[in-house]
Length: 280
Image (tube, rainbow, N blue to C red; front, side, top):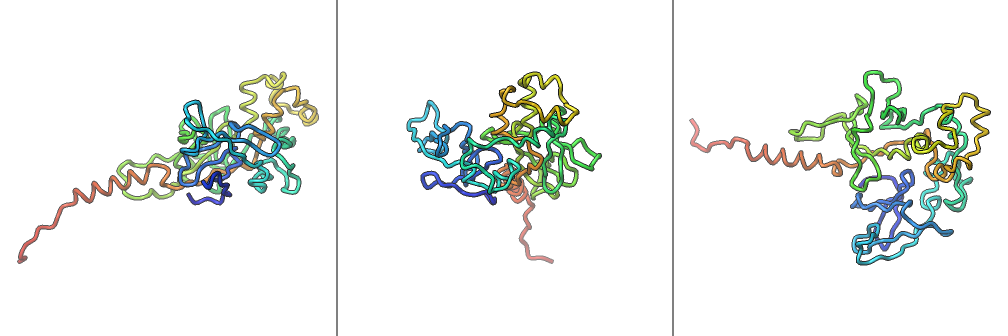
């Protein structure tokens, strides 16, 4: 998989570091995901319980279980962690446990501003209430319908084919024999990353804040005691963001290449053969 994500090796097995989605995923076997939320946090980083036979997250059925130390995300990818938390690298804490949500972003969200995300150079408004990713300055379409997105095999991110001319999900013709034009495969974060405030409001009263939303006055929004909402730790792990980006993924991960190969083989097999003869 071609990506500019950093590599972290566990027992000589390379994993991509994806701090935007709080996970590691194996190079060459991208569906094998180790989630930081499933690891045990400790002062020196995390402890991942791994099945060494397949280097996956261990479970009750694993014959072997080993504990592997993993560094803090602020050490694994400080540049992306700084962008994620709306700060600079030199202001990052020494450990993930000391990270706190960006209060300015959270206040903007409480006052009704929706998060945003770039998809292949075009900005989208993240509107989980309507279940849409709405393209900015394009009123031809509603955009991307989140309910129509499929999760990847690991269940950690959405994946789809994206028409970057129409700014919608693309459904290719199953008779295709080449990669379709104006379409790319992309990966989109899950709901907790897209809009953590909406998710928190959906499942919690946030100490009465849900009934007041949106709050129109900045002084009222700034005065909220987030500790009382009992969601400050959640927002520290899933900060409200206005700078998310969808990631382009290889065509080989979509199954489209298999359809193309099958159609090409069928086309070749059924191509009329030239008859041999002496000619005129």
